[in-house]
Length: 95
Image (cartoon, rainbow, N blue to C red; front, side, top):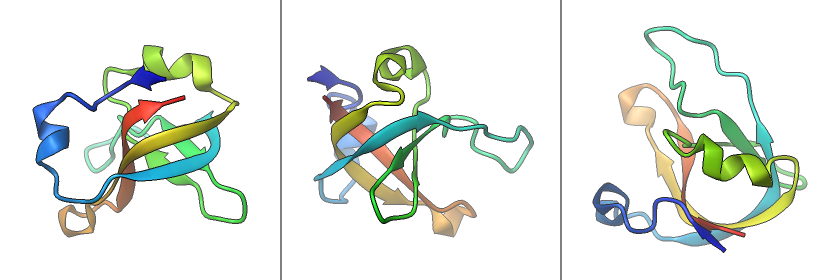
């Protein structure tokens, strides 16, 4: 198991519940521009579900070994719709 954001205070302050997510982690192409979130450079593909963008700011090197692999993520689904974005997965740990 690899820790990603579990010990970060900004992660711990979020009130969304931690959940387990299983799927295939995949890199994604993120358009660049003023209204985009370039830190969403990965997505979690869940069987039978819609891919979930994964927040990966400054941790791409930690997630790269898991790319194209089935993973188990402990994290929080954060809904940033009020900020003009959408749901994204913040990772505490990955294995």
